[in-house]
Image: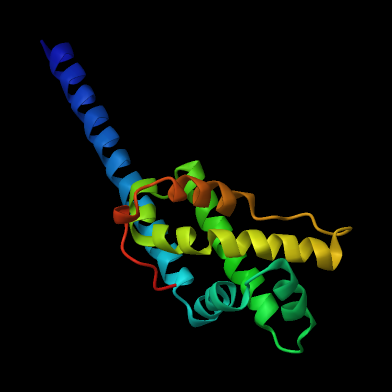
Length: 157
């Protein structure tokens, strides 16, 4: 009889540990989403997304943007890099896909075409040293573009 009680207590402890592990994982994913969201709404990244949305109208506009003596080109690169990292987190399951798409899907959808022009413009600027084309952003934006527009609210960038 004492052996049965010991086994039952061990099984209960194992079950509680498993439930705690699942709860911790859910909380970690939530915290990571909130941290990513806070990072993405920083003023500098918002400005970079605005540059992508407003100033990037063709590949040639990216070449012109690069030639200006301000930092808009770099801010656009930085914003796009952060959106790429966020998409990587979604791809790897670190962040809930449905939650992220609900919150940020409209931004990816609205920037998709501009990002293609941005990449084409970067290739015109320096094809020889171009190694990073934000692949995770592109994959997630392609997936999102296939969703119904009513799946998320309008983009505010």
